[in-house]
Length: 218
Length: 264
Image (cartoon, rainbow over all chains, first blue to last red; front, side):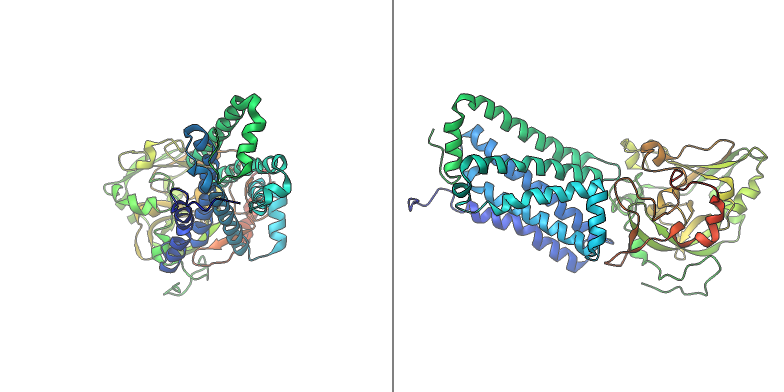
C-alpha cells in the first residue's frame, strides 16, 4: 500500500506522456498538410523509427541518472518512456506493414532474408515481453530476479534497433552512430555501476525492484 | 499527376509524369547535402553559367566547350523516362536534351575507346556537401561505350520544358533510364573516353553494394534491402520493379552472356 502523499513533481508523469506523444500529433498534422514531402510513407517510417530509438535511449538513461545524481524522479518516468518507445516501435512496424501492402509473404521474406529487417523485427519482438511485464504486479509475479533479467533484454533490443538504423542508411552513418554511442555509453555506465555495487548487489537489487516509484532508502 | 501534353515518341514511357514540385524537391544529390530536401534548399549556390565541359581521352578532337555551344550542336528532344532510385523509389521525368551517342560521335572516338567516364563539378564553394567526405569527390560515373551509344542514353539540359534546376543536375546531366539513378551523374564538367573501365563513385564507396553496371534488377537485392518493389513518388503503395526498369526489350541484348548477379 502506498502512502497517500502527493509525490514532488507530480506533473512529471503526465508531462512525459504528453510530450512523448506530441510527435504523433505533429506527424498526423504533417501528413495532412503535405509537410512529409514527396515520399510521406518513407518519411513517417524514418520518423517513427528515430522516435523509437530516442525514447528508448531516454528510458535507458533513467536508472544511471538516478544512481549518479541521487534524484528519484528519473525512476518515476522510466516505465512511461519505455512504453512510449514500444508504441513508436509498433507504429513504425505498422507503417512498414502498410508499406508492404500487408502481404504476409513479403514481410516473412524480409524478416527471414534481409538482415536489415531481421534486426528491426528482432528488436520489436524483444520489446514485446518487456511491455507486457511493465504492469503493476509483474515484478511480484515474476519474482524480482527474473523480472530484472528479462528487462535487461532492453539493451539487446536497443542494440538491434541501432543496427537496423545503421543498415538502413545508404551512406552517411552519423545519426545511427550517435545512437550507437549513446546505447553503448549507457550500457557501460550500468555495468560499471553494477560492478561498484558488487558485494551489496542483493540489497541494491531489492531497492531497485521493490518499486520504481519509491525513493531509494540509502 | 499531369499527363504528357504532346504525342509520345518512341523512347517515351506512357506512365503519368511526376509533378514538377515533387521531382524538384525530393532529390539525392550529395554535393548539396545528404537529406532529400538539401538539393532544392541549396541549389542557389550552384552557378551554371559560364560552364564549360571538357571532352577528352581516346578522341581525335579533345576540346573544352562552353555549355551553350555544346547544347547548340544538337536539336533538343523531349524524353519521358522512368527514374528508379537504388533506395526503392521512382519518378517519371520529362527530360529535355540530346542523345549521348550524338555527342560521342562528334567527339570522334579512337579505336581504343571502350568506356565513357563522366566527372561532375568539384567546387566546395558551390557544393556545400563537398566540404565533408561522405563520398570521394568529385563524383565520377561511367558506361561501357556500347551502353553509351544506345539511343536511350541521354544528356539532359532541361526538365518539363524548363532549364534543368540545380537540384536535378544543372546544367548538364546523364539520364540512363535502365540503370539505378546514381549512374545518371549530375552537373557534368568532363566526359572522357577511356580504354579501361573507369572508376565510379558508389562502387568505390561500397563495392559490395553498388557495382559498375547498376542495371535495375528486381531479382538482385541490395545486400541490405529488397529491390523487388518500388514506390512511385505520389503513390502510397508499392509496385513491382521491372527488369531494366521496364526497358528490357530495348537494352537486355547489351548484356547477353553477362552474369547479372555478379555484374550487379
